[in-house]
Amino acid sequence: MRGNPGLCLGVALLLSVCAGAGVAQPVNDRTALDGVWKIAQPRVSLPLENEAPIPFTPVGREQYERNKAAALRGDYGFDPTLSRCSSPGMPRIMLSDRPFKIFVRANVVSMMFEWNRLLRQVNMGASPSERGWGTVMGDAWGRWEGDTLVIDSRNFKPERLLDDLIPSSEQLRLVEHLRLADADTLDDRITITDPDMFTRSWDAVVTYKRQPKQAFAEDVCLDRKAAGQAPWPGRLARP
Amino acid sequence: MKSSCLGRLLLFGLLACCAPAQAQPIPPGFNPFLLPPLPPDAPKPSPDPRNLEGAWYHQDMMEVFLTKTMHGDPVPMNDKAKALLRERAVADKSGHPLANAAVRCRPPGPIWQRDINFPFAVLQIPDEIDFLFEEFHGVWKIRMNQPHRPSGRREYMGDSVGHWEGDTLVVDTTNFKDVFWVNSDLTGAPLSRDAHLVDRIRKIDDDGPALSVVTTIDDPAYFTSQWSISRKFIWRPDRAIFAEYDCEDDVGRPDGVSRYGFSDAPGPGEN
Image (cartoon, rainbow over all chains, first blue to last red; front, side, top):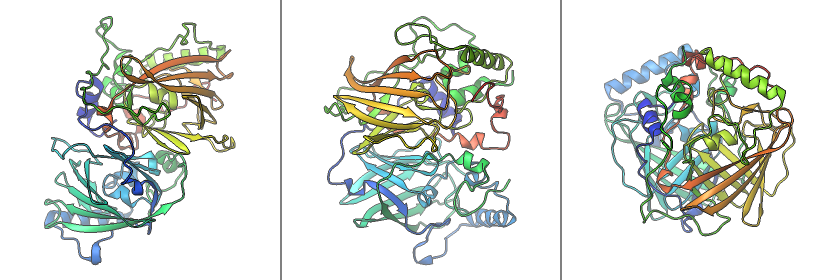
């Protein structure tokens, strides 16, 4: 049931151990990011800085236009999140209109999303590395530059979406700079690089507002879909 | 048999896949879930007995066929539970096992969630302790020092409230959204929506740091008396970064669980 059967088998056989980091104590001077956050302005598409045009390659443009045409027809088969509640992946999950929690710890930063109980983990104890296959969320490595959390994500699964329409490939790489604009405002500047889809890197900036402490409700996307509700904000699911 | 081994593997993990149709007997003492020792410089858990944070892992062989309590007595099933298990076994043998919560990508309940041999992480804030699991998008939320919510609000993982008794975290869970299965087996023992679980969780040193969890089950719908199970989870900081789980990418398709040979119908006798 994993995205990659090879991974499942490998895990099941338990012959390999994930390289990585231990969870340890809270990091006192970084925990300002800790807390509950929610996107300031709900949206289904990535907010491009200065509303600049997306620098598509011909392949990227063709896929984008194809997705757009399908969406206009109400055919969302190209969108695994809308059509079957599959993980939105990165950076799309950062556009969720539901809250998420950040837990800053020494070796792992965890982002716990209310949406379908999704978990994003940032490895703070290792250097980025390539592997032969990708996942929807990719692998994320983090470091601190002053009070800014810099996250480098790579190893993505191909043929997924960056937002409601923009395609991506296994060449995708994301670099995020998360920093507090003030005590209750968090900015995530996302630099997107994917030479298969874009002629150059480009930036999107997503802003979040701090929310009161809360225990999340148990969200089950497939139950919502079965009840006729939208699996993902902004659109209604179509059969 | 339409239910392929690979499908079961993807849905349940190694044991549930291979145990019912095992071609070769497992050698005595063989444990495929055994991890190599941690290196000496591996991160250590907090010395604070009330700080459970970190990554933990169930290394012991999973009790796929749960028949005994932690004291070695037979699980005190009533006639209704026994009949339900028989029907689940018949469905399994027919090649169309019933699709429980885990198969349908729904949260499988806190006991199953912990029992499977995959890691989980504990994160604590003053009013809440969260157990986050690699599989099933599992989140077990424990609200500290608070009363239960009204029974009108039910969740698959139940409503869990906790408090400390000395260095033991005592968690009381009830108000489940759906019936669920105690153990990770295609013919698992049932628990009703009104089952009442009490977990006693504490740090221990057993050839290394570990979490001891003793769960007492009270569910008159299926059992004639309370009974308990005991589990140990070892400290594994090297498993803190989880592998990806995206069950919905398969099960969310129109043919759902039937593509793996499972029956999508609810189990007989479930309430």
